[in-house]
Length: 231
Image (tube, rainbow, N blue to C red; front, side, top):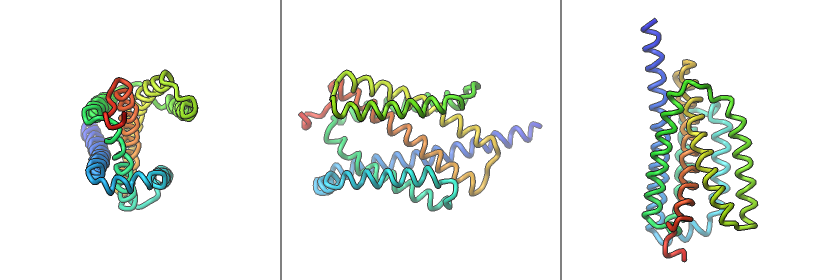
């Protein structure tokens, strides 16, 4: 019995470490590409000119990964995840022209701390969070509708509300996704299936982190963190 419990614990630890390694690699690539692009004025101008095609390419990649990650070879899924992270870095380079370095740094550190705390909650909490999946889905749809409406009304109050709700939503999703991944690891997956699941899980956590970061950064911008160059 003890041997089985120890083996299960090792499987969970290995799977979660693999998942977070993929996620960390994606975040590092995104940050690196964003910084290098912002430092190259010519490249940054080209990225801005191609921003909408790049965003469409991001959406295509993320839908392909989310829908086919469990059927694609892990090597292909990994390459698609890296490509998505790099494309995100290209589009995120624009943030470095809109927000001050202090605001970006503070938002990243705040996101990292919140993400880490909610990941721990999701990993250790005993309560089953699976029932919250539908709630999070409807909350996300509601948030997207509110963001679309705000494009036309441009309300600062609505922007603040959307940002606060966005942070809370993706913090909750971080705990939810972490628990779902832990439960998946407890099912005993291994080999190629485990690698594909780790990449798919890394994508989910990466999206949680990135979206939480964007909403927190927007809050810092509301609080005066906009770059002087954007005035």
